[in-house]
Length: 196
Image: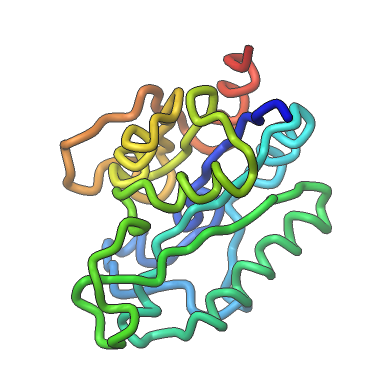
């Protein structure tokens, strides 16, 4: 079977809004599905990519699990609600992969250094295997340098930074996006124009 092209998309700051981004406070996380706010243009962006048969994989660090602020079940419920909100508007997210780990967590089973917490590429590599994805033809869309670095380490074709969320201005300088755009909708337009 021919390998597929994917868009690996970060969650918070790219498709969902987090109040802490505006306040510069990383201590606030999306902990309840009632608090989900979809960034305008995100659903349209995913629809456009769906129309081009591009696999949509959300990859997200969720350290609040390791920090004891939310259970894995709570995060899974939030992710299912995000998928539902997109689907009811005609956009399909194929899968959401989350890293629950943090090396300085308080929940023992999740308090570790792993290969899935971005900037490590573990989530991308697992999704590529699960969904028969050609990484050399695929894209990463993120608002943090850790997203960009994960895409580079995984061997993705192009990394795209967005100016929503942290706007790739999170204090790290060890990677730069290949392309920087306003938001995920602009990123989807770039991908559609670039796919061969």
